[in-house]
Amino acid sequence: MSATVALPDRFDLSSAPEVANALLKHPAEASVVIDVSQTSHFGALGLQVVMAAAIRSNAAGGRLELRDVSDRVLAQMTAMGTSPEQIVETTK
Image (cartoon, rainbow, N blue to C red; front, side):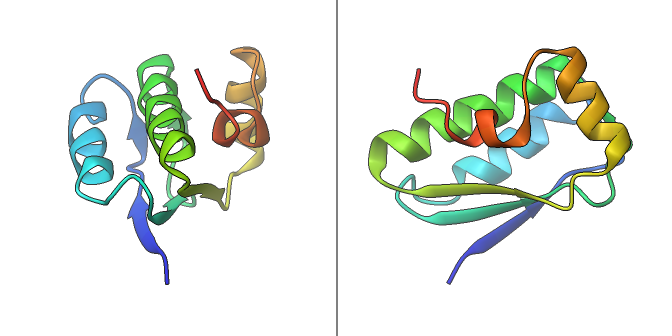
């Protein structure tokens, strides 16, 4: 069974600490789904939060998944040089 953490509409400086805390509430070895369906802005600080969660999860044998990434958010990720697949595979 996996836990789900939903991202806000704007995942940026104002919301990153809350999402980081929500991700840290789950054990590193857990399976966590990050629901991106309601997100229209995925900022660089949000990317750092998710990549840090992926590093933590991958080091402990957990699993992180980004689900329902819109074309708009995918374009923002691409502009930052990454993709959902690359983010969840981050190891360091």
